[in-house]
Image 1 (cartoon, helix red, strand yellow):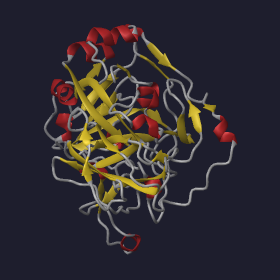
Image 2 (cartoon, one colour):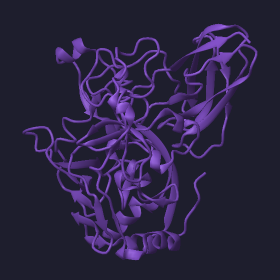
Image 3 (cartoon, one colour):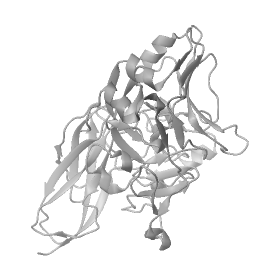
Image 4 (cartoon, one colour):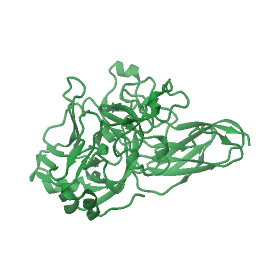
Length: 425
């Protein structure tokens, strides 16, 4: 588990309020892989690519990650970093919607502004956030709404992520409700809105140049949300939202505002592009529909914030890159999580889902965290074999053996499979 830092540690790491964290995101270094033709992507089939097919690149504060786009920056975490419950900061995926992002934030002048329908509008320095409010910690998965979008059939537009648009961290910060309490929410407030420092041209003629997300004032998530200033015991990387970002446990990352700088109390519902029509899902039990029903206008849509992330599990190893050996034990390992309740069971199949056996679960880091699992398997026969994994959460949700479809490419949680080759000894 990441180390726990005190408030004094935080200010020491940042050199006090005069700290300046800066980098130039345009200086990406492209790996030799980018000079070679990429494998053809033909759709999911029985065993899709685990990651997307972009080149490996490095950005400041980051290890080599897989690039989907560079304006806005979208970087996917490679599979090997999901062998353990906590994702290293330098390997954590990156997702921006707009191209103009901050590459420097001066803590001497930065303020978190609470404005709008408050009794006592505030401008809080980083020093005040750390010193004047009780710190809290929570382990929580941050997952892009479109994680695994490349698996959808029929294909849908948007970033063609594999499974690596996610990560888990121990977040340290201030409860949102403590900030709202100090500001004092006036009667007549209907929503709380969040805005960061990223901006720029969005979809044409949509008024989408600012990334704004809002919650109804009675949403329970506002009581759980954290304004985080540490990620795995360290200041947030610039590309993950320095100096502070929202943490919305159990919810998709579109609501985890990066570089948070404005919190507003609204007296009218927020109808900006990033609330309507963006990030809408079918208002059905599993968020699924069909292209035909969508075209016929039969589908009622709702903001994706109305649902929590579905239960999922992933196979980190073996990954099919090297053969296994008959009679030689191997460890099937990976992580599972759910935004709807803590993971209580993970099943593993070594015969393509015909039979299942329970895996051994790792430490419980909380209801919203990755949970490790492991399963020892000694192949008894040579040939091609298919491993599968499925997770169960405390609310009784189990991964399905079929995928969903919706026009945004959201909510994928089909049972994962991995083909492996077993050789004779």
